[in-house]
Amino acid sequence: MNKIFKNTLLTLAIILSVITVAVVVKAATDLTVPSGALSGGNPVASFKTLEDIYQKLVVGTTAGTPSLSPSAGPAGTMHTTNDIYDNIPANDQVCIGTNGGTATCGGGTTVWATEDITSYDCAWLTTDPAQPAVDLATICGYDTNCAWADGACTGTPTAQTTINWYAGKAACANSTLDGQTAGYWDLPTYPALVDKYLTSNGTPSGFQTGGYWATTTYPSNSSNAYYVYVDDGYSDDDFKSNPSYYVRCAH
Image (cartoon, rainbow, N blue to C red; front, side):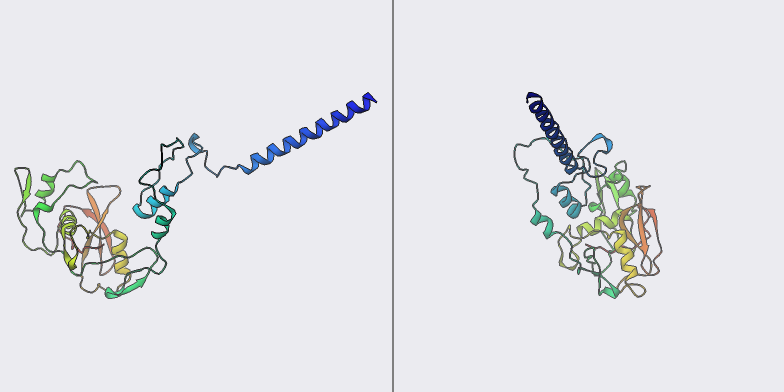
């Protein structure tokens, strides 16, 4: 009788062990880690927070490695799901299209100034973050109508149909064209200029036949920026100091 009881206890112990192992395996299976999450030895490197999504969507910055360290409290700069939702571009947003009209696009809206920039104030010139080694005195000297003296760029250039990239950036940043306040305008992006050509029948209305500066710096040479000929679509990069291209501000 004792032998039968002992055998029964042994059998129950084996069954209990098998069940325990099965439960542990199932739990481990449910805790799968996304592919690439362990890359570089960091188990959280591939996870993104809501703040990462907001910054990518609105600001355009790339997320860094998240931290799992405890925080003293919610950060004041964090954004909610409502913030993210409100900044998702609608599918029916429009881009400037044929001859100043509209064309359906999915990536947002480009607003164009109604006329080209043809003059600017030498005092508006600023340094280029993409070229930290190029000082303001050098940039000032790119225009013969400007002069560097006593730590300032002075002079007012005469009206010019084409200007260098630095002047274009400065002129747009300070422009109040079309009733806007300073800081509203900038040089258009390279894709925006290409789109302007693609959605126009020939040279866009109000534009010159020729090349226009883009704000986009050439990736492999920060001394250069892109330009686009809006009449035939030809594009390339050139020295930012070259005063051979038109400027049309955009937002």
